[in-house]
Length: 247
Image 1 (tube, rainbow, N blue to C red):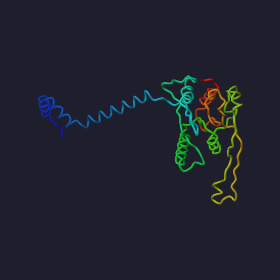
Image 2: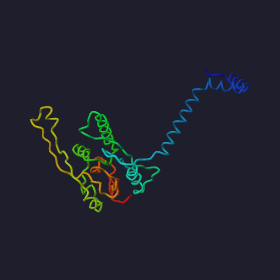
Image 3: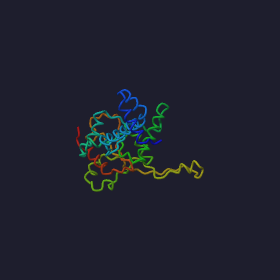
Image 4: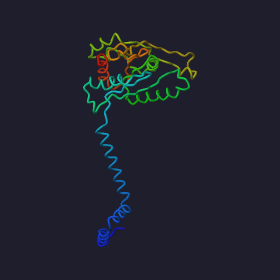
């Protein structure tokens, strides 16, 4: 109900006559929800502003599949690259996906972890938020066979002939599936299961690259490009960085 001018004046006069404690009680009783909603709005705006001012924008997404790196090497692979690329370390970052575990032969204990890692990787690829993957032989075979990796052709390095030449001694090949009629075979629409593959250069062996010397990996480790990576120029910059002595 709308109050008249006289009623409003009477309420103001009564409010002024109240003690401090009574005034606080009155405000708490009649304005509690507007105050709480106002404080909530201020908190949300403050949080959003703080996040906008402090959040670092990913310039590259880097996965680690079946490969564990120490703090020193991880810093070289992330912060070191930002420095090399002239990025703003306060506002930009290399976003890591650590501890991905990919295996077709995971035992009972690791099966759920392997499944979760595969779902995480698929989601990142679908969202175009995975560019490069550091991986061991098993995970490389899996991603190569499933068509996740980009073939490192001269066309990919177009305009970077020197970089292509420097990396050539470290290129490695793996099998890539061209066609697979497994679905048709399972549905009884094909008499035999036929898989056609080809060999393709789709990774770089990194153990002997300057950046990784002394890392002490117990097995060969590779770096590959995800096929739908939208940050090709940054991918190429990263390959150039691997050839530098960043120790």
